[in-house]
Amino acid sequence: MTAAAEAQPAVVRTPKEIRRARILGVVYLLLALFVLFVFARGAEGDATFGLARPTDRFLNDLQLTLPAAGVAYAVAILLAFAGTVQLIRGLGKWTNAVLAVMLIFLVFAFLAWAAAGKQFSLVGMFRTSISLGVPIALGALSGVLCERVAVINIAIEGMLLAGAFTGALVGSAVNSWIGLVAATASGVILAWVLAVLAIRYRVDQIIVGVVINIFVAGLTAFLATRIMEPNPGLNSAAVFGPIGVPLLKDIPFVGPILFDQNLFVYAMYVITAALTFGLFRTRWGLRSRAVGEHPKAADTLGVNVYRMRYLNVMMGGAVAGFGGAFFTLGSVGRFDDNMSAGRGFIGLAAMIFGRWHPVGAVAGAMVFGFADAVRIRIALLRPIPSEFLAMAPYLATIIVVAGLVGRARPPAADGQPYIKE
Image (cartoon, rainbow, N blue to C red; front, side):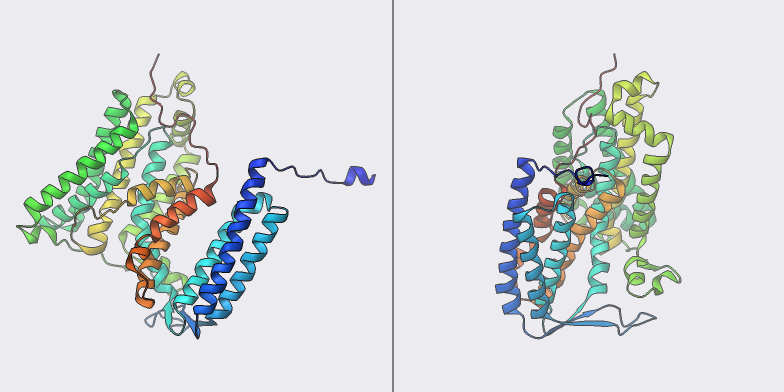
């Protein structure tokens, strides 16, 4: 075999890929300078990361101690190297993977800087990340269910808020289990309204979602003022506490994070697994994806497009209403105005991050939950203005969607009403 035949063809990069590589290269170099002059020079002493809780059965005193400045210098070198490679030749198909790794290193350098001379519990932070990511993840799964049949559900925020309010009210008046059922039902009702207007009457789906969000925000605020404030007993529901899974919760580091959580976390695991199996291994999933990609072809093959869209949207509403109950029944036990705080919209970003796949959507939600947990923990370690810390989850949303996702293709018929001929 000749040398010419053995030679590999040169990889040709498009102007868009070259431009993105250059931008990322400059960003990496700027971040390297930032880490060098802020984190490295501002870190004094060692950062001690706790890898277990004092109450854990095994390795309850496990810690990782690193020089904070050394971590910053190492991360700065890695960022500078990645930036140089990006500027010279690019990283091709590894661009997104390297970007994700660099962001992880950057966060680690930030944590080492914040924890310099102090002790920081990684187990506690990751447990909080999972917990804070649950409503975002359930909102993202709701979006996956709806958009897989080509219905855009902007109303996830309103469904989360309605679930939180209904769960608190009914949970206080009756009990938390009935409150959980009522919260789920509230999401189904709102989803039915969305489905009727968007599918039957073909009203613009974005407008319908925005109207539902505004309506729910106003209605819950009004009812909370009229009902809950004069009757505090109607706003004090019992909270579902942590449930440790035998044996699994004793696994060092991983066990307390994943298997010593409350009902909502385990429900998230089950819904994610069931939805992944259902979408890609069952007749329902095949029909759902067909309706989202090419509804006319699906209709020709005997699939009832309208019924599939109604079914999936209402299932999505049930998941969102259930997720909204986390804010009250799974967290604080009481309702406050606008307590969902945009988590439904972040759930949509997580859905895009995951490319409309349940596992990817949940992974994206955990990224945002981690950003929120970092905001809470860092406030206890460093005197950083609260206004900057409050931006962390939303800043993570912008970075992930703009930097990591790149070009994501939604279902082909997403947002398009179907008219049966």
